[in-house]
Length: 272
Image (cartoon, rainbow, N blue to C red):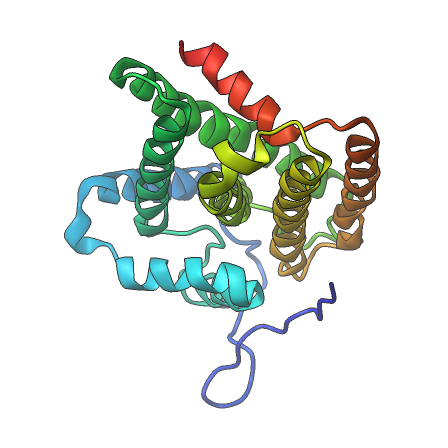
């Protein structure tokens, strides 16, 4: 997988958009830390206020992003760069993507419940588990980890007041989670019960290959997300976990560890 670092979009005159800090005089260093925190808080409040105002959401554009996360994820992150230059923030300000992702989580939960033959009560437990633990809970941990590591070790010197927004780190997780969700919770569902969850080598090979593709794609889209930030260095290090994934994949085939079988058993034990 190759990736070329993207340059920020140009203004109609052909020159990069001016920095928001350029408006401060020589005797000023920009907003104080307290003002920056208030600005971040205001942005979060605006985001959550719009969470239930569906008429203000651009679902068509959010759907376009989901499509391009499969076909050309670089285009999604070009828009993040454009948002930084126009709205002075990397993170999304429209919750439409999160709302659509919730719909896909609901649909995948219905499919899994049908395959596993669970009750209505078990379906509710399963859906809550997938949303609040698999997606949001794991996302909070991963986003916080990458937010800390990138700001601590990967900011170019001198930092010039730039840092990785936590909201952007969580957006990167959501972007990477969506293809993983479709591969593991949609594409394999029709074959899960009658083929993948069987005690055959071919079943293990096919199911574990889907896991390798899904997690590998998660890592790749995460890499693209942080590579899109022009003030980060050594972002190719984020691709190194793929090597470990390939090793685990080979071992799983040797010892016939069927990941999909294990996932179904895990979910069934948690909701029954």
